[in-house]
Image (cartoon, rainbow, N blue to C red; front, side, top):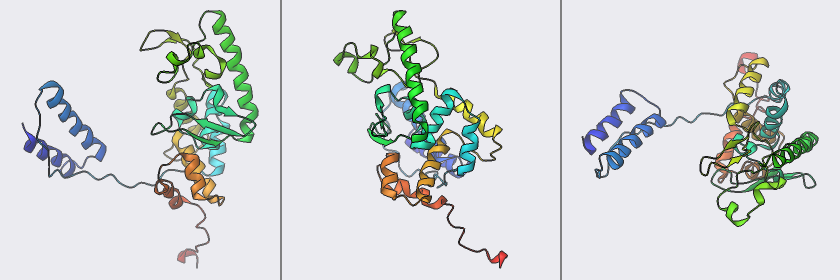
Amino acid sequence: MGSLEIRDYLTFLAVEKKVAASTQNVAFNALLFLHKQVLEIKLPPIEGVFRAKRPARLPTVFSPTEAKAVISHLEKTPKLVVSLLYGAGMRLSEAIGLRVKDLDFDSRLITVRDGKGFKDRTTILPESAADDLRGQIERVCVLHREDLKRGYGRAPLPFALARKYANADTELAWQYLFPSAKLSPSRDDSVVRRHRVAESTIQSAVKSAIKLAGVKKHAGCHTFRHSFATHLLENHYDIRTVQELLGHKNVKTTQIYTHVLKNKNFVRSPLDS
């Protein structure tokens, strides 16, 4: 099998099987890995492949009533995390990756570290969630003191900071805002640390809350970020401001939310005339 057979197979997937673009890409990368890493064969450039097209889909968005209904069926950590997804436009990985030091209550700002594309940015700290966030920090402080007494109390540090700041991982400021319920060894060095809460824990809670709220939409955690952007635009905030809060590199990415705005109700349907 050579480049011609691979080209024909990938085209077959797109034309005959009508697979999604991501499925075709997985097949392509698997074949490249097979030849390079397993068979140790260098393939010539594969040209002329008919590429499966990625459909342009509009994001699912909650109405404000739906968003509040879903949040009302959450409690404890999942509720506070989702409050940041909807109230600050954060991704789930960004919210559960927050450290205690990333919250600035005086300036009402949250610093997102190493977001998508390894970029830092600031976003708003929802005033309605401020007291709950302060309470969360107090709980983290108590938990951290208990861990230190037991000889633990270390948090994973990003990149080479553990070498640069020897004892930073035992400081409260570097502890996760939403820590895991149990201690566990790190994969790289087997040191027992307090990691962050798992994404699956929040995702499972949100899935149950959506069902309990009776929302009939294909939605999840990321829907709250979509709703944050859409509702800000509906409230006439500048799209550039929304772009910065979301951390989009290009405003064209943010513009997709203008297509799902609900302020088209000034148009009267001919059926109603």
